[in-house]
Amino acid sequence: MGDRPGPKLRAAVVGTGLIGGSILLRLHESGFDVIGWDPDAATRSEGRARDVHFAEELTDAVRDRDVVFLCGPLPTLPETLHTAAKYAGDGCVFTDVGSTKSAVASFSVEHGLTDLFVPGHPMAGTERAGLTAAMPALFEGAAWVLCPTLDGIEAFRMLVGLILDVFQARVVPMSPAVHDSVVALSSHVPHLLAGSLAGAVAESDVRDAVLGLAAGSFRDGTRVAGTPARRTADMLMDNREQVLRQLREVSAFLHELSTALQRYDVDALVEQYRYARGTRVALLDRDLHSFRRQFSLMGDRVEEVEYLLELGAAGGYLTGCRVSDSAVEYAGHRPRPDAQSPSPSPARRPAAD
Image 1 (spheres, rainbow, N blue to C red):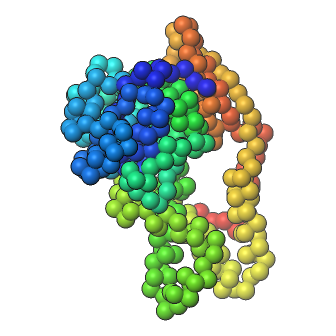
Image 2 (image 1 turned 45 degrees about the vertical axis):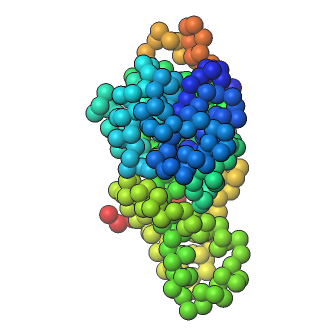
């Protein structure tokens, strides 16, 4: 559990598609004073039909709010942050839900908003879109990245408590750069692979037969290809350099599998798949231990932020944040210090630049 303002906290959600709509509905059902806004009039009408307060103008939605969630399309986030910060009340905390972090984080630095803005990314969603697809329970048990900074550590602490208690997610502290590198491999490249597989089937002369036989592996492997195309394109372009870098790594491994197949090398295929299986097993059964770590509110914030960033980069997450008069105490889980990553496969070679 975490310390957070009670349901009297005034919140706004700007952009109410699947993610923003799910945030809005969860806050609403939890009894918060929450206002939604969306540029689409039909979406605003749909929200009101669900008995949720929607403003007609963005400026009215954010005025006198304590926290604002920015949930519009990636390319709009910097300008929306800039506008919302001008009209919200003093001390209002802002966070976003964009799937890349470096660009909007840099924008907040350039415009002096780092004390109020905490870049964020809830790692949840479906291939569906829009407020009609929103689910209040969408984030339960999901990882929710927040990027702490020295200037914005108080805002970070407040958001940690809010996200843990209201959305029941796992908060992963992470720097924007590390986040973008990680999601390139964990999320963005899978979108490329899903699109490639689904596209290849679409062009195949046995397309209909494939769809007739498609089972779990095909459905799981192509699920995110159902994501709205523009949203996927924005995500990939906004993280272009990291996606291309990680794609080279994936292509190198695929090349090794293909080469083994071409050479009738069963032993090499078995070795590579045993190696890959280790990562899949680790995903389902990670060896974690609980921790508690306290920092003085009068102490050096550098130590606190460095600890948080190291925790996220190591694969850990927060489950609690308690702020007293003199200290902040974090609780959570992290991989055991003696946990070993699998040794690189002997066949692995660095990807070509």
